[in-house]
Image 1 (tube, rainbow over the protein chains, first blue to last red):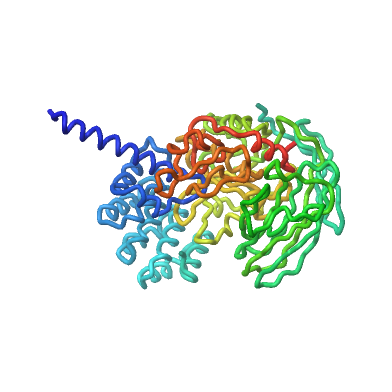
Image 2 (tube, each protein chain N blue to C red):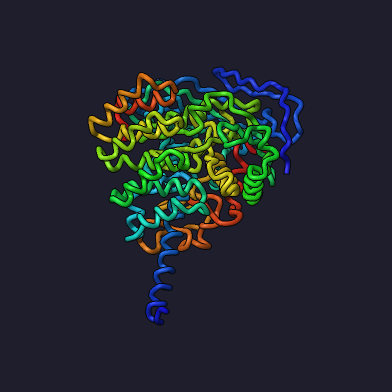
Length: 171
Length: 379
């Protein structure tokens, strides 16, 4: 049984966490503005854990769960890396897979072996997302993966994304 | 509430010429649609522009009885930005300058490819009859000389006002123009839009349409860095049967460097009653339709508000506000760089044009209602 002091502490922490969750959700629900790193950093410690919790909370609307995954790119830690790779796995939610692909680009060359196989995924929108992600990674292996896929890609929109990723790189 | 499909049998051909053209449009319709014959168009043709940018100027003749005027210059390319730089009224007074963009009753933000200039965006500056001079600035990177024109609405102001809405189904999971009319979630979204727009004095009339273009390309509209080409290209497909209509393209998602954008309007303001341009409509993300259908209605209400000439009451960082006199304003009270809904409760966070999703049915002020009811597409 927790003593009064610990109970107070736990209640205080729970209250603080709720406030942070609301603040994070509000940023994820902006009409036109993608969430910015500086705004998340202004909320202090623990935002990465909150983002992972939101991403897996099925009570949260889909767009905000996806944006939570995208915002994790600003927290390139090992737990986040593991979380993103798990969400890219086939069979997971299609929107969250795309978002995980985008965020994995923040891990650079280390993410190429995890991203490259998804260039052959049956979901064309995921292939586009992976092409954008590989285009952001300045590593020869990323370019090689894109070049290997280009001749066999049949969907024009995906070919276009790969060509842009190879030609000019994507920001 | 009226969700009847309309039948438009009249002519809507818009023939561009060197002088003012009145576009007449008759037809058998539900009797509730804004008539196109209350619009008068001007065509200023193509105006030469250096590829390093520069100024473009047009004399716009506002007719007697105009309640709104939308002048525009555009087609200079998705890679160049422009804005209205000066606005001179018929008395010769400079009533707006880009040197002081927040000083008065007009506003024009930098936009790519095409810049609509709408009067009014506040009750403080209305289109008095006579010769106005509109001057646009276009920055470097243009790929073509701009075409310029204007449209005037000669009409009386109604309250509430009717507004025609084309709902174009590009990619909405499991729905098309037919099934959406009886889909519970989609109709909940429409009911939310109707409730919020009712607060702004608007009564929408809907037309359900299936997209006939490249669905695979546009189901997810990708914005990559500063490249809005895909977004602009989808808006360029707008080709409604009538001029006075706002087109909502319903897609699975707008993705900006991976992040989901809930909605985006051409502009703001949008190219009212001018179709087939990069500013001719609104694109709405529908990925939340099953989870939270009212959110989709809120997105439509908000983005439609942008198209019709409204700006955020307070921007996310709390440092900039809309040009209206009666909308509540708020600033970043706790200094964390965000004017959030908790600290702005009662100071704009309940408004339809708040920067993030609101709770319940969003509000609108009298000035906002005046602006959206005055727009050339409203009646």
